[in-house]
Amino acid sequence: MAGENEMSKTGPTPVIYLADIPANTNIIYPPHLRGHFHGRAKCRHGDAVGMKNFGVNLVSLEPGAWSAHRHWHARQDEMIYGAGVGAVFSLGRTPGS
Image (cartoon, helix red, strand yellow):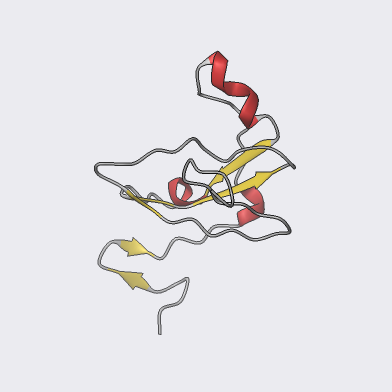
């Protein structure tokens, strides 16, 4: 059974403490799109353990904030898991349309 002290072919199993990963509130979108993202904080868990081709992020949103604009990746995968009251996932369509 793999444990935090056991060695693998790539070295020790990484151990991270989620509370130690800083939340990033920077908005990288152009100025005319930034208003959607006020109230978003993103913790890059995958980066903290050296992941390269799969994004693992914890995104906290205040009411009305967006996590991202619709986008896609050519060389990376992404999974979205929503938790919380009133979470809405949209692919560019409004609910009920």
